[in-house]
Length: 152
Image (cartoon, rainbow, N blue to C red; front, side, top):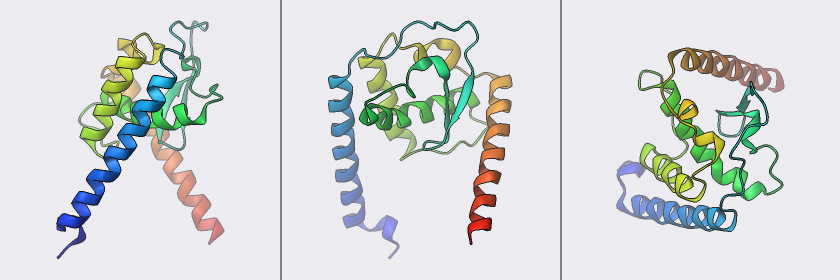
């Protein structure tokens, strides 16, 4: 029997996801509305975020956080957002599962409704941005593989 079809494995995964959701929910409540709502930069730069493989804009305040818990919780949010921006034709993967990532994205919108990162221009399909994202990801993947090859 494959492990993925094992009912015990499925139950453990469900429990693990529930605990993670609870932790994220508590983190969002503790930090409610602490992220920037307006940009001080007229042309913010988009940057690759290595842990999630997603992208953030420099004015979104995520890299400025002293609270690493909130930054860690937001990796699901920014990864799902990248999927929205890149569109259905580009496979950007998921952090846990599509439904899990989407639930965390919706939860974040509830606790950070005015966050600049939820601006429609940053959460909607954009062909030019999608192409740029896929190019940057390809280069990042290549660099990571090169680093692994050199190390071993």
